[in-house]
Image 1 (spheres, rainbow, N blue to C red):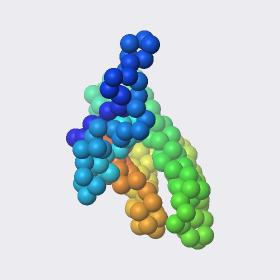
Image 2: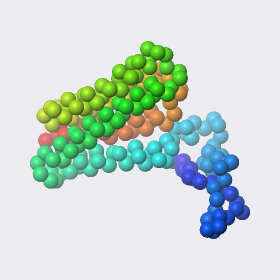
Image 3: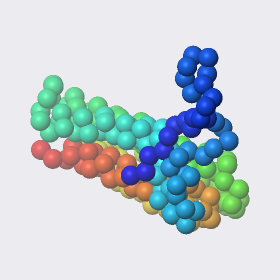
Image 4: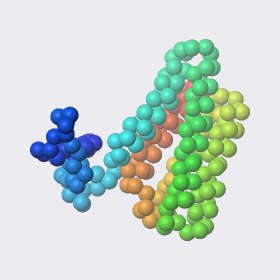
Length: 187
C-alpha cells in the first residue's frame, strides 16, 4: 500500500521551534516516486478520506458483532445498527447532490437525475426505521447496493470526473456495511 508523507520538509530550513518547515513547492514523496502511468497512485484515497471512510465502518462491525454475540439488552445492538445504517445511507445519498452541483460533464438531464436520486436514500432509510428489524436491515442493505450501482452510473456519465479512488473505496465500504446489516437477519 502506498503511503504519502503528510508534509514535505525543506532540507536545511528549521523553524524557530527547531521543527522542519513544510516545503509547499514539492509533491508528497510517494507521488514523486510514482510514474504517471502508475495508476495505483490514483486509486488510493487521500489519507483522511481513508481514515474517515474505514473509521465509519467501526460502528457497523462493532454493532454487528455485539448483536451476534448477544451483548447488551435484546434488540439494542440490532436497532442501533439499523439506525446507524440509516444515517450513513442518508450521507451517501447526499454525495450525489454534491456531484450534481459540481461535475461539469453532467448533462442537464443527468444533473436532475442525480438531484432526485440523492434524496431517495434518506426516504428509504426513514422507512427502514419504521419496519421490523430484519425487514429494515435488509431494505437498507439492498439500498446500499442500489446506491453503489448509481455510483457506477454516475462515474460513467461523469466522464472520469470522479477521483479514481472513489469507486474502489465505495465497493469496500458498501461490502462491509451490507454484510453487517445482513447479519441482523441471522438468528
